[in-house]
Length: 468
Image (tube, rainbow, N blue to C red; front, side):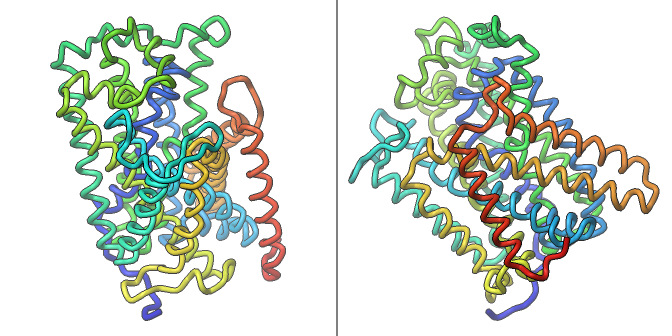
């Protein structure tokens, strides 16, 4: 490796693009029909998204305080280590790493969904074919996902400036697509406001009232809004004052909320003909293929015709690519920081001639390689448990903020820190404890989380220099 220091080459817009791109990945395009509407309806989803954004703004307040104190790659790991010691820093980083790294293959494998939505039979449905957990896997789609993983690993290794510019371009195209479809939905007679009725999912109202439906969406916040917290991972490579970090995080959260809400309302208002309302449509989604098989694609086609398919396809592709590129960057910086601090082998901290932790990027790619072969349903188990990682890192950052705020007698930070920690506990509770809200982990996720935890304990014990 030819250099020993990260380079300060990221602009404000670059970092903002990484933050927003992390928030609005594949889920913003696919989950309106498969999850959001079925759990909370139109109004329930809108209320939950906005409340979740407000909670994330509380976390952002804590993050901004900590970034000013420790503007180093590693972010949450550094915050926890400085406040509570190396063992706590490692615990925070271990679960945050799980959260970050799982998002890379989920976005890479989601690329095939775009092509499945373009026609009844995707152009990538060729070669060997088998099924895992009810999901059909084709060699063509495996090749597509692997190509994306390697290509963006390569682009990430070209330098943070290159990655930042590419991410910025993707985000501009993503937002342009959302705005075009949203504007068209206001003008098109095929996207009627009446289609937003009913406001909640009626089939479950007798078992889950409106409040419970809102909660069932709200507890997904650690997964939906993860991405704004990549800002501290890039603090060491940012060319602007750390005081700007809060603005970047806040605006990315608000913009992410806008995209989630907009795509959900578009999916409901632009349902295909032949369905009396969005309820009957989303109930029938598992039986549909082609553009009708993804609610946002069906709505775009119903609103703009073939042009709508083109716009939503580009928008969805950009959302997925920002997730891949953004979390390659964030995860590699986290691993680099752990290595620099002696908690991972020095191999992870090696920088190439472009001042990029190439070995850490390569590790992310290698870990992601099995994902295309097991399918998205099985991958869903890892995403569920990765939400725990987001909640844990939010909690550690909030507690670290309280720790340092007490020393400085910053009452505002203490209030926001305690509030943030309480919310992180609530999120963790609903994710780990079955409550009937369809948001707790499935049995395979519990098993995988246990394996990850045990692996972390073994690695922690192996590092003899860790202190309690």
